Image (cartoon, rainbow, N blue to C red; front, side):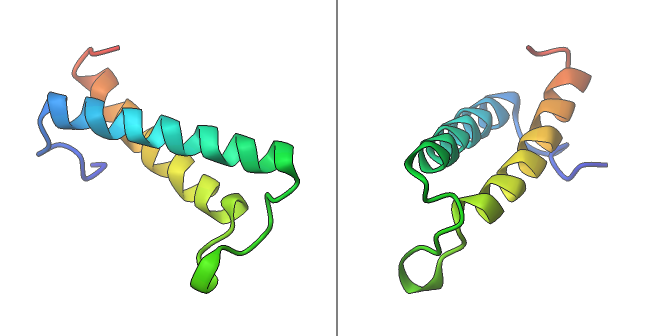
Length: 70
């Protein structure tokens, strides 16, 4: 179980879009040389946030794949 089984397909598609936009921000930080810079008030740097984002995206994509949604 991934924890996403109870979410609607529409919700999962929205989450997937948000996660992909988050990865775009991580890529921007990588290009800008700020990949390891801690954010305001101690927020996780893009390097750590990106790891979490990838993990969540993997779970969402897995559930969508199980539902045969691309």
